Image (cartoon, rainbow, N blue to C red):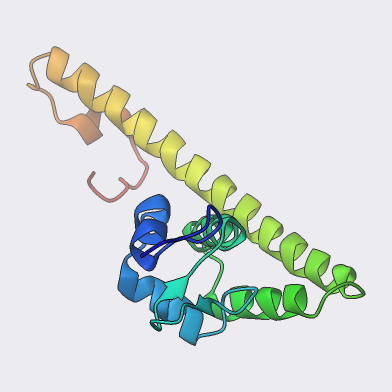
Length: 147
């Protein structure tokens, strides 16, 4: 099957994006792509570099927690052409705020885990002969949940 430099098969797009063929078909069915996927005379899909670029963005959107419904709405706006950039910006800003909040929460989690690792490393280095929590909880205070 001859393809122009711009035409990619679904298998090639799957390989380039890391998405499964099934996921690519789902994205198409669900209206998550910004343009229609062209069909060749034999009925096979023919993707473009722009499709790949869009899909790579979608992968990042999903990895950052953006719901499919939001990606669909964003894709609808892109398909709508110019004049709705403020709406697109609002979607991106809202998601950016959510990602910043996730990063803040994950940083707090990482800090706790780092402290726990250091405490356990010290405990193990001392031979583990002392109760870990008894050594870190001041007398007269309620002990936190065992860790």
